[in-house]
Image (cartoon, rainbow, N blue to C red):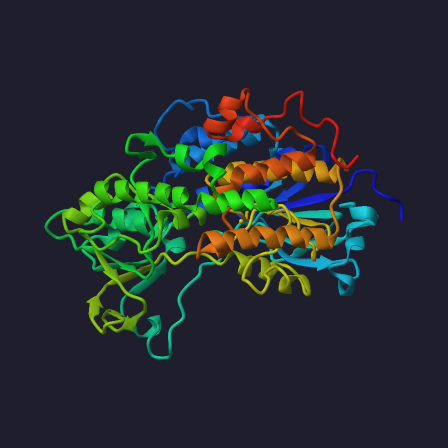
Length: 534
């Protein structure tokens, strides 16, 4: 068979990771399959009308496409983000690559699946492309039920861990939602309603929201606003695990980035591949690290009525930051609680009865509607589309997805050593998931261009194991695959592997004391020079 001059690459998913992949892989002219009628991912299809970004505007932008109004101190709304992504796709002429309403329903591996996990599946000496098509994708377009098949040498999975596949609690027989006479709805389904529909749904109803993360907090706030007035009913949040919430990016008048997003602050935290001396320094700095966490906790306890409502977590703030579970509060969240329109119930277990829900202490809460803000199952999404044996190796025994270079429960990795000629983008969490995705897409583009080679399977698994162990030691919620406490070091290693300078600031003072953002990772004259493995 005649060898293709230009390998064919498929990108599955049109969210932030998919668009970043398409932009960086433009020379390969990839095909991007998006199942819905619009790009934007969760910002388009899994957002409430009140949903806003949780990071400041300048911290959530592509390195080569800054916000036009980046000086605006407000947090962008989900509609602003979708518009920004549309402008990005237009500016870089990505639309010809994008196929909307094109859902990948099946995948076939064209190689020898019995040899999965061996380095030679990536080509000789760690090459990312084989000499022939490796994957065949079955795609359904529009309202058609006909599957069309396409062959590719490489596939980039960007379907993400949020949206599409809701995670719902499982109950013993006779205690599930089938016994409840009211309405049960997952947050994903709520996102699909317009303002008129949500108002009609919740107005004057007894509502229970299960969860206490960002989506649950936003949903409860919307419910409270709908139920203002004499006929309104309070919304009750059912909380199993408390997490720290933050009113703004300022702590006792100091910018939040000062505590965790500079080289100096991250020097206090352990990171992968550190030597014995740095390990010892991290041990010695433990009191200072804990002191920073206590300092932030003292502000949050003073600023917010956490003790009044029994909402102060038992674990340190650092653990929530290290697992990317710190939620930014809507401005009026606690004011609605003070007015009695939001109530809180903590319970380890709960189940349904015909009139509502039953708490662990056997108290019954009446409800007309129960919203499940219980998250999504991103790994299940992958299992549904990947063929065997690969669907069985996306998660290891620790519940972590083993990805080299983490190109986001989650992972932004890049390469699973056991799944050949495929990358995963959009599965790691950090302070800015857009930055985490884009930098890994730049890494992936240079890998596919042959500018550097993958290490052996053993070396990749060693790196994965080190990162997992660091996360395990930092937070009890390590399965979320968050790199926020060592994100700069993580980016350093990726830059070095690409042949870039890892220190991106203009002076050593800025390197030590100022926060990093995506603008620091623009390509410059010092990038793509001599590579460490050449």
